[in-house]
Amino acid sequence: MNELVTGDAVVLGLQPARLPSRALAIAIDLAVLLTVFVLLSVGLAVATVTLDEAATAAIGVATFLLVLVGGPIAVETLSQGRSLGKLACGLRVVRDDGGPIRFRHALVRGSMGVVEILGTFGVVACISSLVSARGRRLGDVFGGTLVVRERVSAARTLAVPPPPPWLMGRFQQVDLSTVPDGLWLAIRQYLTRMRQLDAAVRWSMAERLSSDLAALTGTPVPQGVPAAAYLAAVVHERQTRDARRLSAAANRTARGRAQESPLAAPLFKPAHMPGHLNTSAPGDAPVSAHRTLPDAGQPETHREGDTPTARVEGTQGQPRTGFAPPA
Figure 1 (tube, one colour):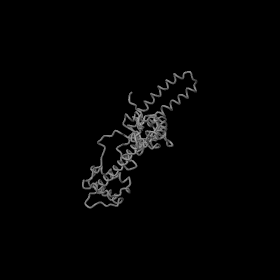
Figure 2 (tube, rainbow, N blue to C red):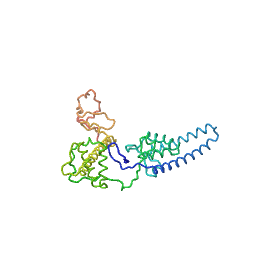
Figure 3 (tube, helix red, strand yellow):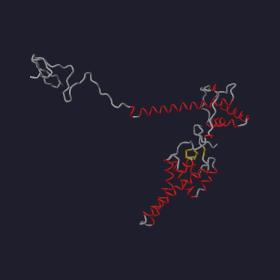
Figure 4 (cartoon, rainbow, N blue to C red):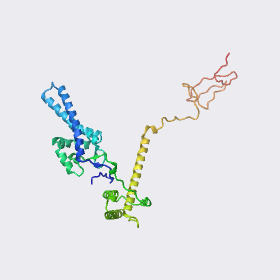
């Protein structure tokens, strides 16, 4: 089994890289690293010509570790498994489940690469890659990684054939949680390659897979339904459920981001509006809405908390607005 399968029994459209392409990518990476190492060593040798021999040796060892060991680790971590050589050859380093690598994966690969590539001139790496079914070297085995090909021709991508229209949606109530990942993978591989098989072999494999699937789900194959059509319909139902689940998860994530976004909050909060409009100018003392100026001849009284205001009387003892007519 050379295809890359995730933990959810989803077969990815990625193929493990083989020795020739990996060797070419490593050769390109080593050429770049050695060029950088030589140029940096010459520059440091000129800059440290006045230092003693011990300091020069320490600087040389530090340069070697920084460029030839730390360089590949940093590049694979930052580029998520795509160095210059792998980019030129269409390769990428991924985890065993197809996910992007992290620093710890790149660290293990780089540390083992010093021994199996630089220390033995690539002999150990070639032997382990030839022995492994997926072309993995020791750094991939200990780091839990795999080098895959990203550029795969479209002709090699095989899709699961759809079920007959009259079977779509017929198995919506079937419990598929008890089906192991190995059986899903076997059914998918059969559906994508059944046209390449002999008729007798195709029929026997469909009967065996359908009986295993019916025993695990508790739903027998309906009468008059071919075994291959039954398998295609159940796989289509599983893919529909997976797509619905992923869509719901994406919608929840989008709603959560929208709620956390500062743009979703109002730009300002309206202040508390009182029961009456305050038309006083800035700096004026607040006046109660129900307060009236006292009539002429009556002493002006002030309630506790009120601010005294000036009273202007008219000619007939009526309060005026404070504006006097021109003389």
